[in-house]
Amino acid sequence: MSRYDTDGDGHGPDGANGSHGHAVEVSETPTGRHAARLTDDPFADPGRLPHEPRRTDVDAQARRRAERQVATMFGLSTLAAIGFVVAFVAIDKDAFVSLPLFGEIGAQNLAFGLFLGLSLLLIGTGVIHWSRKLMTSPEIVEERHSLRSPEPDRESAAAAVKEGAEESTLGRRPFLIGGSLVGALGAATVAPLITLRDLGPLPEKKLRHTAWAEQHQIVFEHSNLPIRAVDVPIGAMITAKPKDVEDLNELAKAVILILRLEPDQIQNARQLELGYEGIFAFSKICTHVGCPIGLYERETHHLLCPCHQSTFDVLNGARVIFGPAARSLPQLPINVDDAGFLVAEGDFDQPVGPSFWERG
Image (cartoon, rainbow, N blue to C red):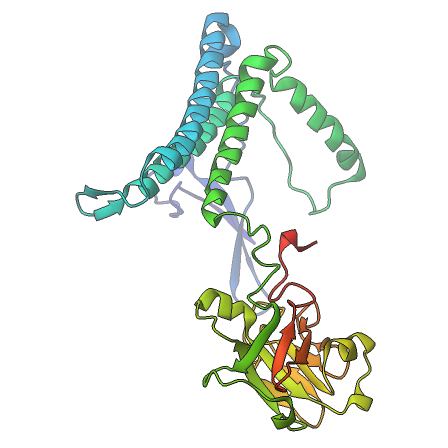
């Protein structure tokens, strides 16, 4: 084994700066090659610099000024959130403004972005300023360790959180910073809720009733011809609608499927009560998301929704037997008039289409 010195750049004894070199030992390995290793640490631990207190740590006036700055940011954030609400109410949604490089932009959307962005920016800036200027700033050295902390460290975590809460200075002037922060966060959270108003008015009772009424005649969907009960064959599926209803919104809720089955196959007493001699009328609108049902398996007596494959058993009150639909298809009570044509005996036995909050 041999030993020689290097300069700071790793050169040999002839380096330009041998006085700052490191001792290197060279040994020969069993394969005949040479291996070198440093015998001293080339990167000495410089140690920790002395802690320098911040101005707010030693100057009470600077500390109070920083507290006012933080509270001001939180207060301005609250005002920006209020501006968001004012923009929603005061700015016409059809108004536009022209900006260089961007062209025409909706004035309301632009105001939304500016006010809400400013509100969140001021909250973030205030929190950063609070932590840098007012919270305690001890210098901490943490040695590397395994991913799971030792049990004593884990047990002290709760105590550290509690201590951090005490050192956050909220206890000194709780309303100035804490109150303004709560106000800013609350305003920034509540302000966007005003946009829920654009969802429109509540449906109230509009979704509970359709155009069907007692003795309202049932007609074919496309020809508008009345349907005679004796002309409906067993196993057939007919799409029908109420006579003389032209409003598309009303038709969308009132369209029905007419099916004729063997009465002795029906497993649901309520279904038999609402039908007429094996003829039954069900809503065509799927109770999942409102897709029109258009597939009928004659052998299994199943109605299928083509959108998400919800399957309804028409031998048992159109009960859901597969798929995401949550409830049976509404059934329309039917009968015949004096001429033998199918008529409704009232509205559906439950609201049609997808479920909604106010349905109960």
